[in-house]
Length: 241
Image (cartoon, rainbow, N blue to C red; front, side):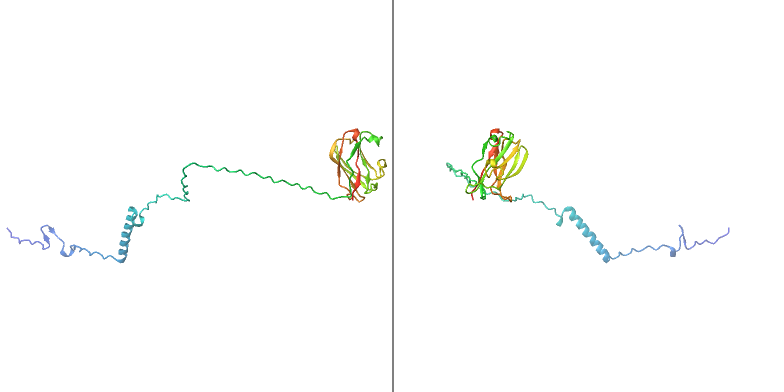
């Protein structure tokens, strides 16, 4: 039997197998010390705390966010009525009141005063049948005739008689000179209107004028009649100044 020298285990080998050298094993890390809070971090922290407080005040109604309770007391505007004094007791005596009587003020109607002119109507117009003076005229003719006298009741010739108006729809506007119809007198005149024997009032007027057309008298209305016994109307004028 051959004696073998005892084998030597390698120094770096254990019973569990070979292990790496100590130089290659991981060294455990040491815990790093906490970093210090900087200025910006401090501001950020304050901002978070302030936001949390504001949110809590908003949710729970703290501080300025406390809800206001409306004032439910009604406000009365205007003037309060003044209370009436209590009515006196006893028997009320009624004082009779007098009703004023209305006084009517008379209305005064002023009548314009006509300016005096030299000639006026002498008496009232006279009606008769034209057959007494103008028998040649039939009953269909309306005759307006007469005379004119001065202050001494002497006949005045050369003056103008103006006859105007409207009868039965016909317009009348005629002139005649005193002294042109001597059948009625020295200052006589005559207007003969055929087929105008009709009833009328305030439709036909006559006025005395001078040779220049200036009025010597006021106009006078002539009433006519639908009657052969009244178809001649005498209208005379007399000077008064």
